[in-house]
Length: 149
Image (cartoon, rainbow, N blue to C red; front, side):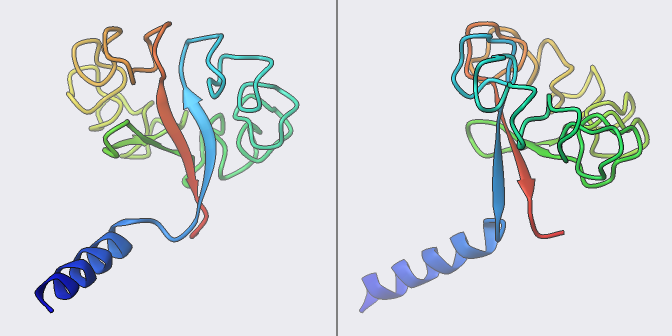
């Protein structure tokens, strides 16, 4: 009975910590050979022709007009970044005013001094970390669109 209760509680905790629906958009990486890398022009997530690519200027994630785009400087629902441990690393956005944007130089995820920022070469953006987007031989950092909003 005790095991059943523990399993039920763990399952319930997991369900509340996971987003309802997510669209996987690849890995933000400078590795041009990674299969999921956004820098691989022949991969599903790096091609400028893929509908779910942040490199497609006509798709919802690459257009400068879409609210879900990484390249729209006014987007408020940009794709989200998560490292290999599941830690949130901000929104992949060119919006310098969004507090979660990786382009906000004063925000937690955009400042070059914040340990949580991919722009910090000594923190999450270190070229020696395997999940850093600046490591040309690494895996990169996961990009997701939470389809809840």
